[in-house]
Structure formats: C-alpha cells, structure tokens
Image (cartoon, rainbow, N blue to C red; front, side, top):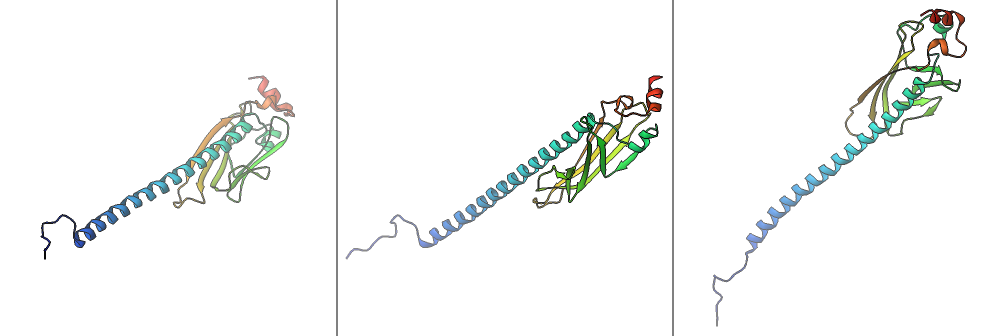
Length: 187
C-alpha cells in the first residue's frame, strides 16, 4: 500500500477560502468605485444639460431685449427716464411691435405663457432690473436667474446674470412721445 506524501503540490481548503475572500473584497471595492464614477458622470452630464438649457433661455431673452423697446411704458409715455425698476416679469415691445412677457411661473421661465426651460430644470429665482440714466439713453436691463435641477440629489443652484442694452434708442421707438423726440434731438 502506497501512502501520499505531504509534499504533493496543491492548495488546501483554507488557502482557497482566504484567496476567494481577498478576491471578493477587491471585487466589491472595484464595483463600488465603478458605480460611483458612473453616478458622478451622470450627475455631471445632467448639470451640463442644465447649463446649456439655461444659457439658451438667457440668450433668447437677451436677444429679444436687444431688439426690443418700451421697457417702462408708464415712465416713457410721460417722457421720463426709467429709474431703477426691479421686477419678476418683464413686459416690453419686440421688434415686430408685439408685446412680450417674460416671467417665472411654476419654477420655469415662460415667454407669453409658453415654457422655455426644460422640465427637469428648476428656476429658483428670476429678476429683471431696468435702468435708464437719461430718457435719451437706451434702456439697460439686467437679467438675474438662479438655475437648479429637480433630478440631482444635491440642491445646488447656478446663478446666471446678463446685462444688455436695447439697440433701439427711445427717440427711435414707434409711438415715441414728442417730448422725448424733442429732448433727445437737442443732445
């Protein structure tokens, strides 16, 4: 009868269990890191989409303001300059002669009740500041917007601001009061 020697090659059950445990721990760490990277990448792509959409909306607003006029109809009709006016909605006349109304409703920017921002974007704050140093100077409007997401875990908001002047001078606006035309002609 032959007996096996203890010097035969192979692994014991204890060695196999230890190796499998170490492999399982390393695999769990790698999967955790991979999941975290995927989650971070998804969050970053979503934030880039928010920024792109908010930038597009802000660009549309500033384009309309740049070619619009009559931002202070009451003051303008009286031949007075727009003092520092701060408002949550902006109503003015666009280049086609139509009234335009930008406002914040239901956490979205709307133009004449049509939603401009995407559904996954949350607008926390929208404010328009209208200034005019002199009745003959162009209107200067500052748009302040705070943009966030209703899908991302953290409640972080991006603050955006743009200041734009109307290209149309008050004396050139259709229906400008004669007092404004006369006053601006002298300058």
